[in-house]
Image (cartoon, rainbow, N blue to C red; front, top):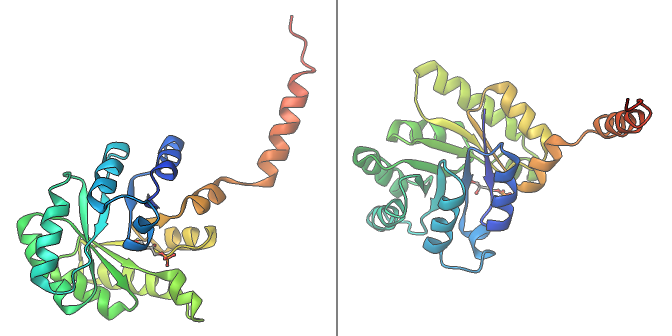
Length: 215
Ligand code: E4P
C-alpha cells in the first residue's frame, strides 16, 4: 500500500519524507491556504522534496477552466497529478486529461456511484473522504470496501486513494480492504509508528545493555 502525506506544509512534508515511508503528497486549497505562498510555488517546492505523485487541486468548476488550470499545474513538474472535483464538468476534463497523458486525482468522492463514473472517465486516482462520512455518522470504510469491490469486478485501473483519514484504524482498515493508497496527515503517520510496548521494550534493552561486560 502506498502512503501519501496529506499536507501543504513543507516542513511537515520534509519531516515525513525523512522517515522514509512516503510515496507521494496530496494537497488541497484548504491545506495550501495555510502554507502562505502561491499554489504553483508551493507545489514546485514540494516536488523538489518528494519524488512521487504530488496532487495539486484546481479551483475552476467548468471544464474549460479546469483544463486550463490543470495543464498549468501539470507543467510545473512531471510528478504533478491534477486534482479535480467529482462533478460533471470535472469528469469532462478528466477524460481529456487522460487522453493528453495528464494524471488526475478525482476528489470529494462520497459514493460508490461517483467513484464508478470517475473510473469510467479515466481517473488515475479517486479520493473517497472517509473521515467526513464518519463525521456525519456514516461508515466511511464501507465506501472504500464498495469501491475496491466494484473496481475489481470490472478491472478498472483507477487507484483508490483513501482520504480524510483521521486515525490509524482508518489506515489499517483501508489496507485490509485493499485500497491502493492512503493519504495521511503527519500526526497520523506518527501515530502509526507508536506503540507503548516498543518504548518499554527498548528502554529495557538499553538498560540491560549497560550491564553487559565490555571486555
Ligand atoms: C486529500 O486529498 C483530501 O483533500 C483530504 O484528505 C481531506 O481531509 P479532511 O477531511 O481532513 O479535510
